Image 1: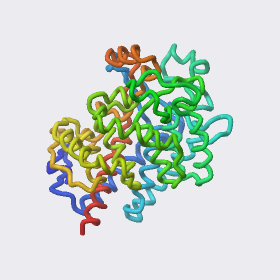
Image 2: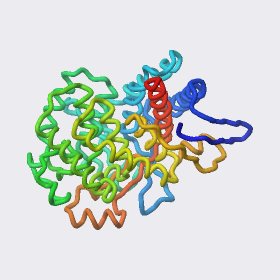
Image 3: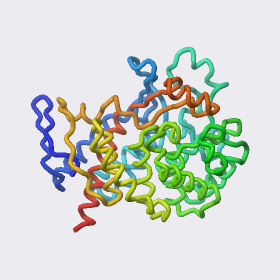
Image 4: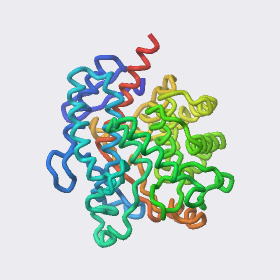
Length: 392
């Protein structure tokens, strides 16, 4: 049970005394309805099929900008595929419509040279930080390369055939630390680990992010691919970060694109729930304790949601928490202050500059996607249902 509370909105009273099958089914249906409502129906600022997301510059948090990216849409489609077996027949029909619409727009973000890799931003008309005014004068010259994170998530969202995943996995081997270049902006003891970089670009500095590495390994596990030296090295880096608790003390340094201990733990639980990895299982009790402690400390409802989901994925019942008072269920869920992803331009800078700009919040953009916030809550309900069935 995640909470025991009352949400009041206008004349509508939504009371959750406890997780029951009937209550979870009702909430799941309402969330799926909301997801379908949020998905773009006609191309405008956002292309048809995309889920709108917005970015806020860390040093100017009074202005939101519409950001046209595939990241959140891919995550929603991928997660809905995962949840599909536990939805009712009618709910499955809604989820399938959402996924199908999502996949149509994915071609806008696919590599223009034909390879099966994906970019965060559109590739048919290269952009950096869409709707940025003068910055968009540099769309072509400063366009970012495709990245391993979006590519791994997109292949899972597409349910791409295994030969495609194998082909992309083979390509990834060229983009590891020590391949084309060496990382210069992580802890000295990690600089010789031949783990994957975040980027496919050969001119891009090598960049480590443990959540990106977890998503690549998630793809490897889901497709049952043969592990490579880069896979093992990436796991080694993740293990060392968790063992040394760098994800708690230096989250923005070891995971510059997520930058939140709760989100790091969520990624670990998602990876571990796919297939057991002995090295991570050895750290499970540590991560469970950390998740429980963070959950009780957090004042963010959505942080509480993802930490509770992580615990459920580890087959541990989360503690009961009480969310803040709000006027509506939507206000609670579609919280603009919760950022699952961060565009952190400092992640590519040399070490001293990376540390300075990171502390100063320079080049850091927080992303907000109301639909993905809803999806995280749906995932929590379904994961709770699965644990309840498993424990019977």
